[in-house]
Length: 313
Image: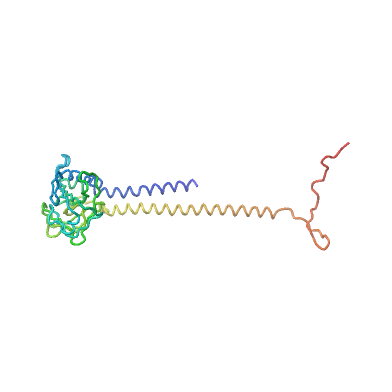
């Protein structure tokens, strides 16, 4: 039972370490928690730009000195007008008709973000190089323009996609292929083809940019690097090792439980057999005829009868 308890603790430790390993892989591909905290701060700063807001007019906001290089703009719209008319041009974004906002709000605010030279700080992308700054477009409820820590609304294009026309983009090196990258609000990263040289399309809100794969330096001819698994293969290998350890531990735990159950059954069966042998080895009684039948009879009387209060002179 002590071995069984130790094995159970080992399996539990492996299971708890598994999400930590996966979490470390996620952190290596993006600073997701810092990026979401930045969205919260920029929503607050963008709402402060509304002094006497008018519907459909963009208002540029100001950020603190520690966020210098980031530009934000806020624009208040009616949900019905946004769906029926769209927005032909809002900074680099072109919003078509048919945009659906959930949950429904009467008015909403579209917060525009341009992270500039801080793009790689909040959205690091290993093995890729940015050709354009990360641009963000997020929607919030406009019922209270002094509110903070507001959750984002869900924005989806039911017809034509939203377009992002990057106005500031560096030329791609010869031989490289620019790709659109989209960071959604859940931490996922998705790639797509660039349209018309500087345009990306999307059906949802989030953060967008144009990147190319980084060119790895050529190996030294004198000391060539030893071949090894790629980063993705290493991550996959670690995941399989953890999964195999967990499954192997569970299988061994089941086998030990079956072994303990079989040992208990075996001990019980042995005890019953000993009791049966002891019963069979008892003293046999002699059969004596009594009338027309036979009955067992004791050979001798082991204890002589005596009166309990016999008087002895």
